[in-house]
Length: 127
Image (cartoon, rainbow, N blue to C red; front, side, top):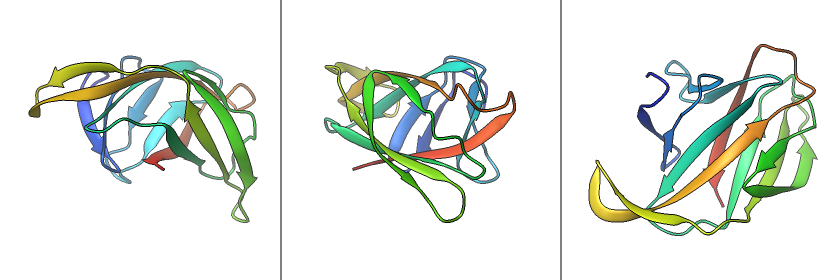
């Protein structure tokens, strides 16, 4: 998909306004360019309060997120890192093309400041 297309990822609809973040069509996961800040628009039919983020190995522990507080950082035995994102924003309600029901929309800005400038695999899921 191109930067502005919508994809379903773990029952969340995602849009990628920036080229530094994108879906990986082969694995079903996501990618972000290490060191770059990238926006991610998340859509859900129900309100969200928390998300889990899982960075695949080798992962750096520094995760910066605007639009959520990062907590519950855990180092996995495989070299990956997981964290809980506590959303700290009021969602916008808006209709989307795939449903007539208004969706709850959240904008996050993600950055992995210590990661090298290469694609970093990760995934998100609702908690």
